[in-house]
Length: 120
Image (cartoon, rainbow, N blue to C red; front, side, top):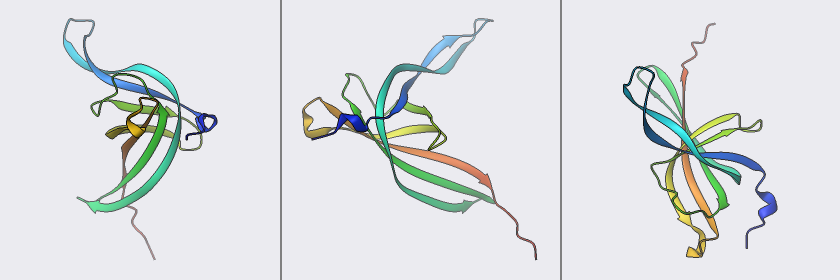
């Protein structure tokens, strides 16, 4: 049983849409399609160095109420204080107990930071 009182974060579910700009060119734009209350849990973090850049990967589990149409091609945006601004790519969508009541969404966040050089 899930306690819905724990859904204390407001997230936006977004998808890519083809739109036209002011001069008629077709562009892809990330547009919000739904705003829901959710619970966000950081699961693990990973750091590694690639091409002189320190790359951090954080994984999150987000729980929210079920709604029709959520897919792995969508993204989640969260502009909160505790976790900062998150832009998350959905890696997995699980319909909890296959009852169409709650989702567990597993997401991946990537941050790029310049590697710090230490001096003596």
